[in-house]
Length: 360
Image (cartoon, rainbow, N blue to C red; front, side, top):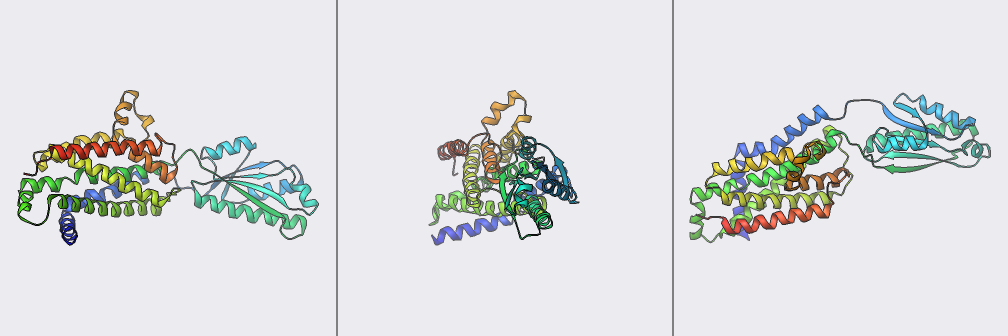
């Protein structure tokens, strides 16, 4: 075990000294996310689109509606319950306030009335702001109307909007793309060491070849964690991405996806006679995946005849899984289906690597 950690340490040091690899692994995905995020992200707007459904035509309902319409930060739209909730589901509202038909009667009888607020759970910050303001406004109107302590019950409902900002779609895709590139280009070091006959010299040392492979895998996994942390920090801080899924699930998929593409990278390394040839082969694989996998834009944008190619790309499933977990996007395939396809890629690539890789 001590030999493994020593070898892992020196493999990591060797990777850290490669400035080009560091740039493409850590810096390039961040630069890509920042450029695309600012180019296609959510346009700056200080107003919150809020829908109001006024079922109560009495004085209390009208007073609440007028008070909400007077909030400067709200861009208020009044309509039917069906229309406003549909707009919320499509991402055109941050909140919908439903003023019940019984509001005036309940307050006249000095009884508690329930006001419903439907919130877009994919925009937690703006939805939380809207909830706080609505609650304060309704309670303020109620105190003026009844001259009594609180007679308001706020009932909240969360709705996941179906339409995302472009950056909400792109951020998980860039994370998946960075994981893929880390794994695919990871075999470069191994091929270089084969060219330099370093692998052959290992036969004269206590360190086994498989221990060297394991050390490379450990270094790539650590790099993947660092890479993921940086990308998510940028997405959360600059573009206010709301991660609605489980963090342990995200970590698990990052580990699994990294292992899949490490196996694919080793397979490509088995085919390449030199490090230069490997880079060319990896680019032939990486370039189609970047534009045909749905990592950077929806698969619906592709012509129909390209869809079979997208189905055959492992990055399609990794990006889709991360998008489902991170922002609860509409799936291309279920998580289990996607993981099953990725597992097949990993097992097949590992077996082919074992069959064709040359140590000398």
